[in-house]
Image 1 (tube, helix red, strand yellow):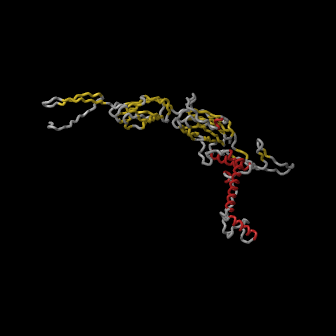
Image 2 (tube, one colour; image 1 turned 135 degrees about the vertical axis):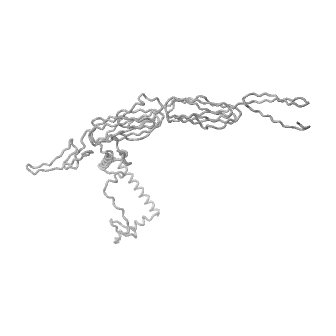
Image 3 (cartoon, helix red, strand yellow; image 1 turned 180 degrees about the vertical axis):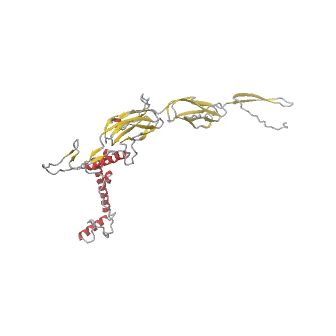
Length: 455
């Protein structure tokens, strides 16, 4: 009931159940009066969102190497719209979208980052769904071909340039026919001289974008792990007369620089070195008793021979050889031989007669790059030492490379500390001085050394 000269507010509600162009007419019936009509129009719009593409072909991908792509999600309406991606849960894949959910402003275009990582080779397809607030869900199909780690093996000659400097990583390429084949045999020969370190070089090449690591060791005659000082063979340049003399020159230059600095400070009056030197000179001229130290030099003023602490003189030994320079070629040679003999004894400490050392025993193989293994045979006993080199590569089954070797020679040698023994001839020669006929027999003692592990 509407009282005279009054107003009333009516509420009209639109329920947009479906997208449509709504056209209606409302009738207002008045008792004892004329009916009034009002036209009602409304455009009911469904929220619509689209991706920049509905099918994404990633092409060739590699195991454990994530692939990333940028996508665009666009709001096609004037209404703010919420979205949320539904990602597949697959055992051999990691799929993510950033951001995976959010709100699109009217007519907004948002950039999305798709990341796909596969862990098993093969051809795959997956479907990603995206829920839209009040709208029809949309989807994205992702196709990709996954390739795994692919390695090839090659035995290099020691004079091969690749054995000295590894080639840089190559450009992406198709694997060669030999990729995937087992490693070749490392044949050292059947007549390797005893005590002679023999090396075979094995080049591992990675024909994929997958970075991996390896670990290699012999099965039966593996060399034991060495300490940090002997882990790597000593470099030849460390034990050279040129390097020793260069080190000596550098040491003299440093001492000369320190002397010049002391003289400069003394001249500037920054210390009492000059006054102590002049005092010592006056004591030396006066010849005052008690002012001479035990070594025949002068003591500082006010000091006595008993109050001064002396540094002990270095005892004879060879502990300084790894850090101090040598001034003779023979000293350099002796130090180098001792270092090599110490390392050789540590490698053969298991007493098996031979040991296969792998340098480096573990490392990384970069994508499209290579790694070089040096398998070194050390021996101190004759015999056949056939073995197997086991190579574990992350992401692939273990590989096995046969090792074939035969060592010849005798582990017993003549000790060179024998009077009259010449090791310069082959075979060595023992000589006696001229003796008169009928003189007493002359004896010489010959020392034999057994370098082998067995009596």
